[in-house]
Every structure is written in structure tokens, then in C-alpha cells.
Image 1 (cartoon, helix red, strand yellow):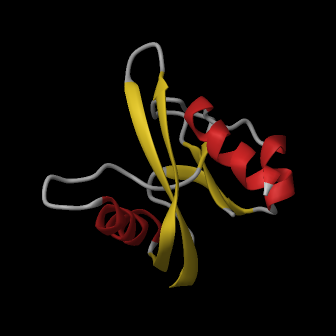
Image 2: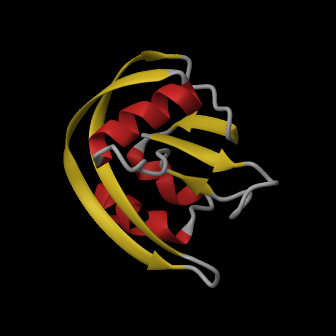
Image 3: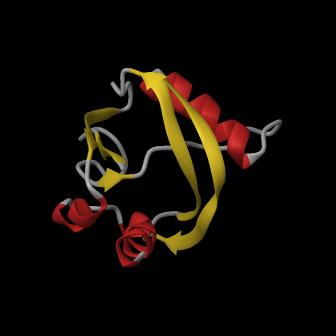
Length: 112
């Protein structure tokens, strides 16, 4: 799994998350994921299927995360928005300080 640590200057700085991004008005979730991974990680991927949707309320904002299973095609995995990017084994996800909204995704991955 690819996870990335949010930079210290960002909201939830220092927390690890599954990468992605915001959906723009003209996009569907898959298009947004492909665009964001290209822009932020210089990565190309093949989105296979919807995996899980998580709604979470933080103290200052609400978020809906739509998780997909995808295959890595190519790219550098370097981020313009995160200070560390790691490929990790699913069983090791909980050794990272995950953002709260990402925890249900990690739980489902670990349980399968």
C-alpha cells in the first residue's frame, strides 16, 4: 500500500494517509484520483474498483473519503504535498500514525 505523511505545515500535519485529493467540479472520483496522483506523486495508476467510502468529522471540518483499489503503473512516488512517502505491507499499516478518517480503510485492508 502507498501511504504518505502530511507535511508539518498542512492540516493534520504529521499524520499518515492514503493519498488522493479533492474532486473538482467537472470530475468523477476516479478521474480525480488519477489526476491527483499524477499531479502530487508523478504517478500513473489503473483504478480497478471502489473499495470503501468513509465519512468522518474532525473538530474543524467533515470529510468523505472514497477509497479505490488501484494498480501502480509507473512514476516516482515523490510528493509535492507530503514530506514522506512509503510503500508498506498491509499488515504494517497500524505501525503508522494514521489520520482518523483513514483508519476504517486500514482496518478493512488488514482484516481481508
